[in-house]
Length: 448
Image 1: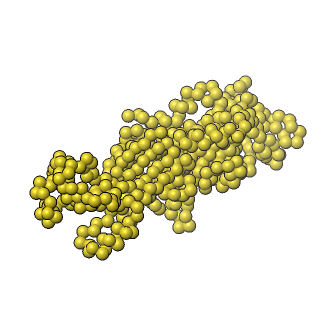
Image 2: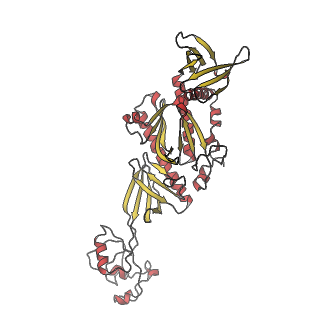
């Protein structure tokens, strides 16, 4: 357990002085309401005190004329000698205690020493605790692609929000963002371990977490909505809310087979942010698709030419998702071993199999006679019409000539993604370092 204390303003209708306390599992926000009563009459102040609650802190300004007005010794301390004089303060003697505690005892004699001199204390009220398990962080202004300057919001699983936390400096914002993000990631990992205890070895959770999914509005405007993604067993899941029970896994909005999806990073670039500059320097690369103003975007392409476009808050999250997809797909290819798809050519119904050990095989769906078979290394190229038809170019090992095999599939995209997954898994099994060297996000991580 660790705790951090910091005074920052919170943005809402009004600005409040608050204190943040971060432990391993909970973010606590304590707010202090301040009411200025200067100029208020006696009855208004009495009414305010009667309705102020159990704890009240009264902050007053020392009045030099007070000793003579209250007929106290002239040696009563001024503002600069409150803590050095042995004489009690007139405010203390008159019953107004700076620590906010009321008293029914008689006031101390002006000449008697005071063991505990008056102290100015702040009483933190309206405490809000935000559980960090499955919580999410948002750094963007609502409905826009603009990052908040030195500010972010934390939202709990049940929807409780901290409000917009505005920090004084970029470094303070970076420190808090790093601490909260780390705690949320650690708690997510704990939840994954607990879930995996109830799952078979072939159905383990590889990674899960919050992202923003871009949605196309009716007016073609770009809208983002929080989604919870999970890589588990053979599938890629998209949820609107995190799964908290075994039954929740079948209630996902979308479920895709991992062999038939393709992960693609769209862009990563350095914004004017102290946190990113110090820890996640990823560079600016204009060769990536710049489809909006948000950094750290990736897409997951699925069957029938469809795709989901996502954005994460931090560059480190992008690197984790890239590595997690690679690992999940690799494990699924090894578990599956092979995938077979129905296809056709020139009126004949055929079966096309991608096998991790044998490569590519095409056989007649009725007679099961093998028409041709090639290893992965014999595939030299391919082309497709973007709809249903694909041409695969194989090199004959005997003649060294290129042979073209043309096939037609109902869901061509899924087949092409499957071929990509099996080839990538084959390369990873032979040379794991090669896969890491192709990682776009990790390639530029900590490059400074």
